[in-house]
Amino acid sequence: MRQARVKPTRVTPSRAGIVVVYPGSFDPVTYGHLDIVQRAASQFPHVVVAVVANPSKSPMFTLPQRVEMLREACGSMRNVEIDAFEGLLVDYVRRFERALIVKGLRIVSDFEHEFSMALLNRKLKGGAETIFMPASPQYAYVSSSSVKEVFSLGGDIAEFVPPSVLRHMRARRGKAKR
Image 1: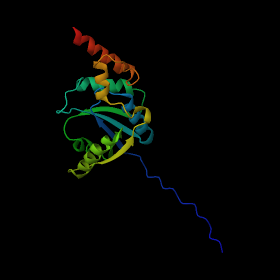
Image 2: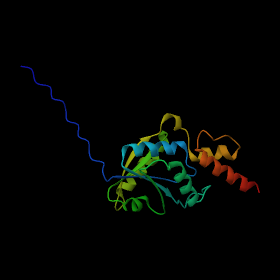
Image 3: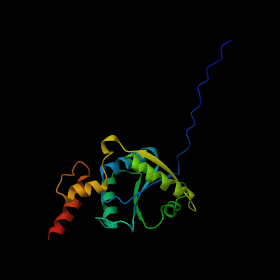
Image 4: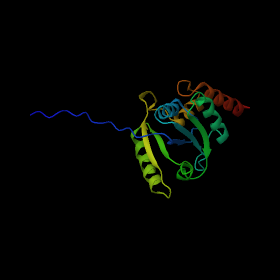
C-alpha cells in the first residue's frame, strides 16, 4: 500500500509590528548601505536606519549631515525612517516593542566582528536579536572608509555613492580648499 504524499504546510510567521533597525555610522552612505536598506524594506514593514554617534570615530560628516544624506537617499522608500542615536544599540532598540537588528556583511572579517557584536547585544540587559544580510556581489568590496580614501586621493567615487552624497562630499572638499 502506497502512502499518500502530504505536502508540508508552510508556516510564515507574521511580520506585522516588527521594526528592523539598521544601525551604522553611514559616513558616508554608500550604495552598499542602500542595498541593505532596500532589501530589508522589502521583507519587513518598518525599517529604521539608525545613525550612531560613535565617540571612538572621527567622522567626515556631522551626525545631522549624515541623517540628511540618508533622508535624501531613502526619500522614496515609504516604510523607511531615518533616525540618530547615542549610546548602546540595545538601549536604542529597546524603544521599539518588537525589533530586530539587521547588519550587512561584506566579507569574512565583517562576519567575525558582527557575530561577536550580535552575541554581545543579545546578552546585554534588554538584549536584541540580530539578523545578517550578505552584501550583493556588486557592493561586497565597498566600504565608507575606502570611499573616503579614494575620494581624498582624487579618485572617482560616483559609482559607489548616490549623487546627493557625492554633492555633499564635493562641497566639503570645496570648503576644505578655502
